[in-house]
Length: 259
Image (cartoon, rainbow, N blue to C red; front, side):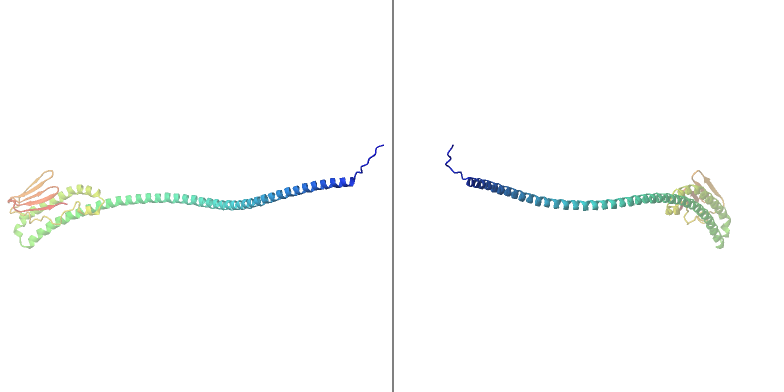
């Protein structure tokens, strides 16, 4: 039989062990609370940070949505303008084609009117030339009758032959020149040139300028020149462009030019 002289204080030992474990538990609890608190603060900071980022992202998304809506509206507006421009271009092309057709028709009408005007001009020049021929013959005849009224009956026999020759000569000469002058008239479009072409100066060669003392006269006619010579030596020289009356002495010379 053993003799155990020591008395074990179990309560004290249990209390000490309990105190140690409680201290360990408290320390672990404090460490866990501190760690969780730190993690919570870190998570809170992250939440705040990501919340700001989320707000910014939401704001950006809203801005992008507004831009997209504005771009869509602009696209619709541009599409409408494009359609309007296509319609306007088509209308402009149609108007241009109509304008070109009208211009061509107007040009044809003007060309036809110009051709008619040229024909009318040539006809009027022919009529004017005919009237000038008649006027020239009448001027010569009037000069002859004036001589009769002034008492030159004695020279009537001598001058009548020269007058008739001059009348026939001028009528034939003007008739020959008429066709060549009318060709140049019909090729000109200006009215100023037409007034000068194929016309005879109003100053007419009368019977007084070619009167002779005899009733006989010599007529020499070539291709381009016609010469009428009286017995006294007075000459009337006519070419395609001029008529000259010359004395025998050549001291006096008058010229009427066909312009």
